[in-house]
Length: 320
Image (tube, rainbow, N blue to C red):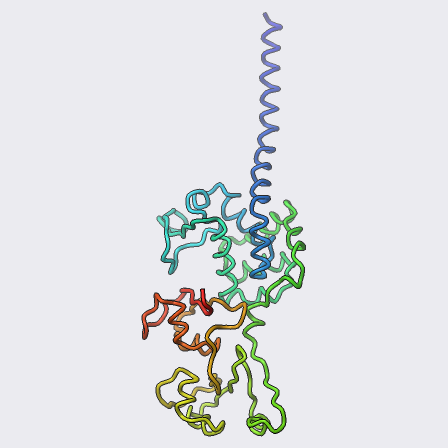
């Protein structure tokens, strides 16, 4: 009987050891399964947005607890993105505040896309796209510096996840040729080179003519008006007003953009959206991207004519 008890005790102890050994293995398995399930979504976002796949995956792992969070399971929200100006489905979860509002997505892939848009179209993250696409450490520290998270160890936690699960391997799965032009590159003005004898050639010798979205413009001085620039370029008054979506002549501000030909129907490739900054008007956005205002209203039907977009809202710059 005593021998039987000892055998049972030994068996229980061994079973406990086996269970303890299996627990970390099970944890590792569900985490690895999550990474394998969504690595292609992260790679696809790297191709379309330029954000390193390792960073996207690490943030998804961290924010969703490898897909185990309530937000991830009930709302397909794997990045903890809050509502802000969101008009879609929502759910409320205690976070920084009680009952914080979070976005709900129909598909997990929509969450990955929204995360990319969040980084790509906000000016405070623009500098990150100047980094080498395989520089996951630079991205991690840059996200923290830009205020993505309040956790002081956020960058090191991302780097630890990337290196522990070898997520950087997915960055090298995308060739440099597949990466899109960065928002900064796409918005950079190009200098116009005019042939000698062309109507604007003599003017260009005295004044720099630039291009945005393949539309020619000049940078105004604070002593100029729309009409004075029209005279300089032999334009009718109504032309300069129409080219710049203006109703009447006015004094210009130093550094203001004035187009000397018609703006386009949509923004340049890779510039399909814009996140509205505090105090920004639709006219200012129209001038920044050389897109006619009537098309901005068309692509953003939720904005009534004459109304201004709310800070944080997303403006479609190209046909959705």
